[in-house]
Amino acid sequence: MGATFSSPPSAAPAAILPPRGMSSPALVICGPDAHAAYLFADESTPLGTLSTDLWSLDIPTGNWSLLNPTSPVSEGHSKGPRRLTCLDNILYAALADGTFAEFEIDEGTWSSPSQPPSTLSCAVPVILDSSVGFIGAEGPSEQIDVTQFFNPANGSWIMGQPYPHAVNRAGSAVIGSTAYMFGGFGGRDFYGDLNKLDSPDG
Image (cartoon, rainbow, N blue to C red; front, top):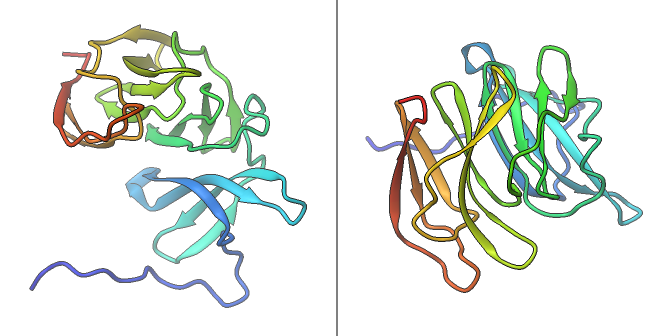
């Protein structure tokens, strides 16, 4: 029998749920035993302004929680896709304004570590061993092919091998110490190529 889609356990009818109007969402599973998922996205308020919200889902129970503070202080009100990944119980985010932030799950706080050499707008996040990688990006006037790695142990960035072409919004998956990237957008073209990237840790 093939794999089938199903809904996770439903929360009580009176439970808090993420609003339907959330746009450009990023979703990642994180935490001990991978029992929690985190949703990071824009929410349009009744006044027409944007609120960037971070929600957590307790997977076994199906209960959602709105985390507070919800937004990184550095982001302001930039609208656009967020990118999110997780390593060692810390969420790492590429924000809509191209900056970098991290969320300590245990502490419930955002912080702004050292910023990358190049923008992270629409970059593709990957976790390779002990490094947090971001591939490609969308600059103010051009698409970018850079690969950037953040080392959480010392807060430093290194530049990796450039991607074969400028790209953003690509799909990614990691198997072992290798990341696989597919597709994406390059400014004028949509790509259908598959490329792999090995860990900078060797």
